[in-house]
Length: 320
Image (tube, rainbow, N blue to C red):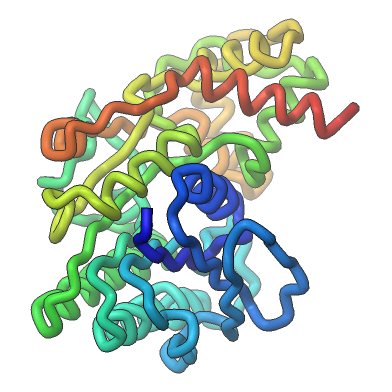
C-alpha cells in the first residue's frame, strides 16, 4: 500500500502497537517524535518535533502525508502538580490538536483520526445506561474537558478547510506495556494479595490495545468514517471482581477475593484521599459500540479473554 501515514504519540503504549501493525500491512509510516528522543526505528521514518502545542512546527513531518492519526496528548493523572492543570491540558490537547489539524489541512492531508476519550461522555453510567454517541457530553475533569474542546475545534477545522476528521472515544485501554491503574491491578493480582472486592456487581467496559489499533486503521481509510465520532469497547462489560478473577486466571495464579461492604470501602477511600480510585473500582462505565459496528462493519478482532491472556503473557515475560 502506498498511503503515507503520520502517527503522533508513536513511542507510547498505543503508538508502538499501531506503528507495528501499519508496517505489517505495508503502509508507509512516519512517526512523530520529540526532538530529544534518541530512538531510531528502521521500519519507518522519524519526524522530529518539539512538544505539541499551538506553535509546533509540523512542516517537515506533514510533507507528503495523506492521513494523520493523532494519539499524542497530555494524559490524565491522579495527582496533577501543575499550578494550572486545565491550562496545561488545553495547551496540548485542545490548542495543540487544532493547530495540527490546520497544518494538516494546509499540507493537503486528506484525513485526521483523533483519539479522544470516553471521559468526554462522563465518569460513570448508572441504572444500566450505556454511553453512546447520542449522549450529551459531560466531561468532569480537566483532561476530559480538554478532549471535548479538541473535538469541537476539529469540527470547526472540518467546516473551514474540508479536512476529513474521524474521532474515537476509548475507555481504559490494556495490553502489553500498559501502565497506570491496570498495571497496578496486575501487580496486586500476581502477588496473590487478598482483595475485599468479591461482592461488587458493577459493569465496566474496557478495550484491548489490539482492538483499538484495528479500529484506528478502519477509521483512517473507511469512507463512512469521515465526519463521525465513535465509542469503542471490547463489547464484554465485566464487574471489577470478574476482571480480577479473569486476570488471575490469565496470570495462572489463585484469585483471593473476599466480600466487604461498598460503603466501608468508600469511607476508606475518603479517609485515605483515594476516593477517585475507589469510585473507579466500585462504579460502572458501560459503552454502546453499535455505531462503529454498524457503520464501519467493525468487529473487535480480539475477545477480552484473548486480550487479557496476551497482556498476562507480556507481564510474565518482563519478569523472567
